[in-house]
Image (spheres, rainbow, N blue to C red):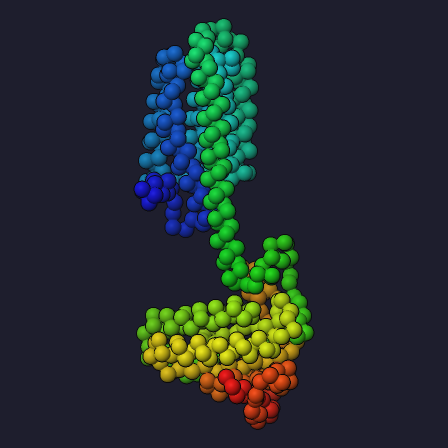
Length: 395
């Protein structure tokens, strides 16, 4: 039933529509269905006046025809304008045949026009339709002396029902439209926020939402981690693309869970490389220790991953500790990234490392040597020359 209803209200949507446009179109279509049944009571409330007997089914027929044309052409704005014009004219006719402003509150129905226009066309295009509502109200006031002297008032019971309907139904429809719109808007905002926080750290996303445009900060104490799958590129050349993507997704999903558990911020993935940082954007004194913990857990995760997929691939992990500069770059596909010598050193620790081992710089070694055992290693580092690095032993 839900799927069927969604199809009914989605007849105007096209594949390229974003969430906001799709929402406006659904509201417009719902209004069309409401207009199909809204005029049903008009002949009764008018005492069987011939104008109501003709106008009520005409409005329903117009709405049905407009919905069919909309489903075929997807000309949404023309469809909305047709409903708005017809609704304004019908409201004025009903004001006349029910005995004028004293005969009921039918003019309130005209207010649905600008409300509908806001939701279906947007705030800017709705302004003229508020002017139409004001015009209908003024016309009703101007012609009311003539109407009340020409059209006999309806019996009290009918006038009472008319007042109740003309107040309750338009306001009820307005509430339903606003409620539906707000629920959908909140859902869309939640999806957008989830996408934003998946792309950049939560603390940075909060600053962007507060209006900060250029975010760049220095973090004096961080530990940057790089991990790369040794021999992955040659192996991937002979593997099925879906298998390659599926295996990477499985492994990096495990890494993401470890990062969340350890309190480390994932920065990005580049091919089969994984980058994370401890100590930014939220500073922490134990950044080196927690980075080592993360690295050790990654090695354990890789062992399970190897068994699951039946591969012999291993990862190299490199860690460097020190100052970095971090900030947000881009305006469309934004990215929180790191720069500095510490980042370069961590990358070199990974590329010059040993598969299945964790290699760290002297800065990380000095911060963690009291709690961990390392073995020194002399390595020629590209761009940095000969260096003494350290391989974590117990991992």
